[in-house]
Length: 144
Image (tube, rainbow, N blue to C red):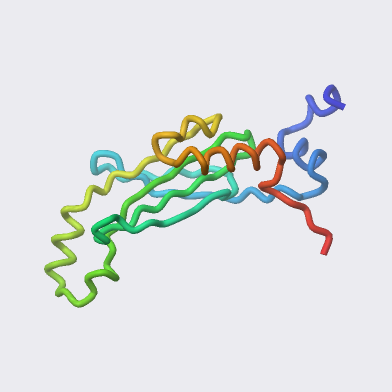
């Protein structure tokens, strides 16, 4: 079967392995800022992890996302936003000050292994993600 699959495009291989149009990769577009320069990263992928956490002072929100690509690469995306909900009672000047003071840098990293993400995510979480990847449990085909 490997010899037969070797000549197929990757999207067709996934259909054979997972049955039909099982893997639904979508167009992902992420805004990335590096030293004040804004870019957009566009790729095919499926989101496998997402969370948002408040900073200890509750002035900012850290958002982290992971995507799996058709080539089985892992994309890590992280950004920090001002927590406007915390300070809704302040006037417009506060928002402009807070927005200007916040480091708008984002993290965009393409990896082949979850271990490369240890600077960003807890080891326990990385172990769970690795286990899901090994057992193929990111995607479960249901006949319901």
